[in-house]
Amino acid sequence: MGELEAIYAIWLREFKVYLRERERVISSLISPLLWLFAFGTGLGSSVSFSGVNYQQFIFPGIITMSILFTSIFYGTYIIWDKRLDFLKAVLVAPISRSSMVAGKVLGGLTDVMPQVLIILIAGILLLGIKLSMLSILYVFGISLLIAIGLICLGLTLGANMSSPEGFSLVMTFLLWPLFLFSGALYPVDNLPPWLAWVTHMDPVAYGVDMLQGAIIGVQHNPVYLDLAVLILFAIAMAITATISFGRMQQTK
View 1 (cartoon, rainbow, N blue to C red):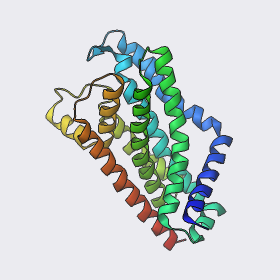
View 2: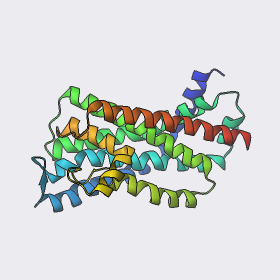
View 3: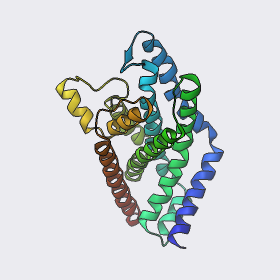
């Protein structure tokens, strides 16, 4: 089997699972939409930032939230695959670790990107977000880059853990800090020094900043800085995931 055929086969399997488990798409959309319309509407009735109402201000962060939660949670399927013959068959197949990771990443993107599209449509229709076709493509490009890094992070966690319960515990201590310290819910201007430092250490914050610039026209960092951090994060996580899959091969 060629490497491209292997990548396609792994992605196709993930795509078929995605089509069968539509409830996981619906459940993953509930939390971001609740934050957007319940939390955003409540606080937005009395608060506005950067010349836009609060719902529109947090909209880029809600897109990031959907990407973050779906991408990291995708890693838990590795744990279930360990208990099935599918992963065993993949691990003994004569394909490279990078091809395994690439196929899984494409499968994760199949989960993530339709959700980005749904939330984006909701924002345009219900919140009055105005985007040109070029801006929409730009948002998708940014979302794709964010998702690749976070999916690889989720795959790394799944490859190194043996139980869904342990994975859920790690998710609790990882997901919420990544989201809450990203500047998705508040402006990053004039933060206390300790909080500004934590925000600068959060790779998700750079994705939020780029999306805010693309959607509401408010961006604090230079584009090249945000882009460089996201690319380096994606590369680092891809390498880490590849190494983790290699360890699974050695211990299969």
